[in-house]
Length: 468
Image (cartoon, rainbow, N blue to C red; front, side, top):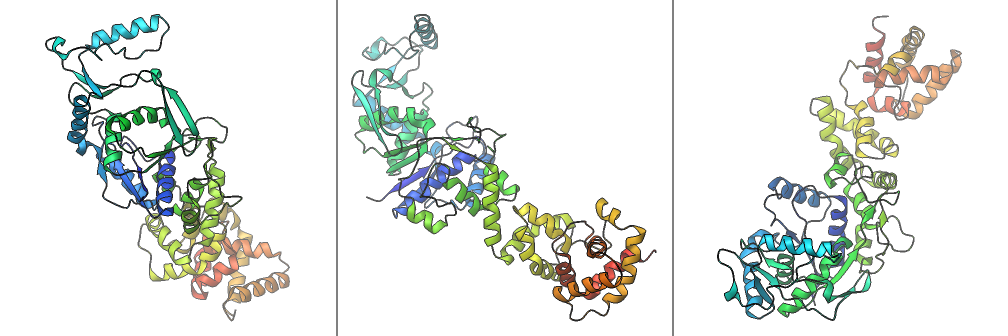
């Protein structure tokens, strides 16, 4: 058997973090078994589904590295097929037409509620002759669900789960306007797509029993279900925006790397011993469906950020430069020159050691692409007092003779110069940092000075001291 999984989002908004994890689990499970992972857009709710949301889902999945292994299926395009199956079920006696009016159903529910009973369809048209149908009432098609016994689900995650069939009423398959319901569409699509395994959130667990009845009514092979507990916040409450329940694209905007987010989502509800850093190849090798927990996972932005810092440090300097280039150019309002790029690459090793996100990296790397004359940050301007300016004027003369122009040679010069002029090292280094970077913080200043080169460094000091 070829394993076939699917991810089936509704395009009514962004790809939320729980959906991204579901897609990841399905892709890894299929990859582990040498199978296929498919994507189905469940767009039957035309009032709420939008093309913008569909595009956003595709974009987010692509950024996360979760592209599917075949053509994308649009559920709305299968509408005639869904209706056809409903009619087949009627012909086979597994479904029937119901002519109950909305007013009758409202009265029925009110009576049940008043009696303290569950509000569910009472089967009033289950065995009636359609010839008794009232004039002018369009029928719906309902499943003829079993009224006794039980439905048993052998779940990959939850184990054996049982529901008494008298708790499952005759659900609508086809509405009076001819449109299929979610339950019917999902089952037909899963069968037609050859889905063998369905891994999804446990908020769909109750749906599974109704869907099993439909599979059995059609005589179709049941897929294997795995219902994964939903993600909670670090406080154990249902995940919300204050916890980080954002769209996947928001994490890209916040500067997270897709490989870091994949690793983090993988560990939310699945484990492999004490392993925390898991490569894509290891994930593919290890994710066989076991190890999925029954308890809700807790989302922790701080842990994701720490994991992202690890991946950032492990990423090549050239790749990082390319990733932050668009934002650097946006901030500088000009394309990066070759010289800017050379400086950026030269300083990247130190920059990435101090960054946790690409946004951190962009902010700290900006010093290598800022245009002269520099706009001093307030704290840098405060450092450049009259005393500091006097120190820079004298130090600049000495710096003209530093050879070779390397970080080590510059640091040795600075220590000797400070000692010989009765200065603490900081009284020299801090004014140098402020004048050369425009800020009071930077990577090691002697490294920065070496990267800028002698001419640029001396020119920047001149920019600051020329009016004194």
